[in-house]
Amino acid sequence: MKSLGSEFREFIMQGNVVSLAVAVVVGAAFGTLINSFVADMITPLIAAFGGQPDFSNIAFTINGSRFMIGNFINALVSFLIIAVIIFVFVVKPMNALTERTKTENPVDLTVTKCPYCFSDVPVEATRCHACTSDLSGPQAPAAQV
Image (cartoon, rainbow, N blue to C red; front, side):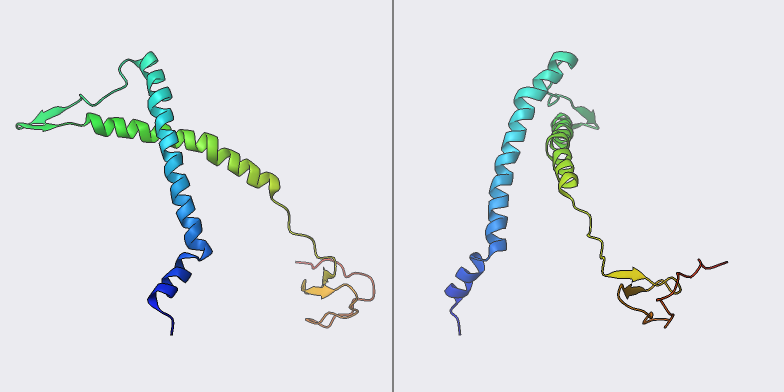
């Protein structure tokens, strides 16, 4: 019977746990990079064309309750900008790379279709195993409707 410590060590050393830990750390670093890019480059660019980039002062009052929706608007704008940046600079290039490296399934040259029942038959066969039709003669005409 294994001890709790050795089972835990075995669990931690599994490839999927280590890969997940690396992915979380890299994802957090990437998130920090993207947030910095939005805050330091994109938001000032928006401010240059549209005025003030900070919406945190936007609020409204209903029956004495003040709703500060500016921070939500800031978060929404940041989210949309981050989503566009991720899509353009990560998703689109990865899709293009995946499409470029995709290979077609190889054609199996060891089988052919039976002209009578359309089942797969080895090329060397003289008779179809499914419908027992003779395959050694000329091909049968296409089925008539």
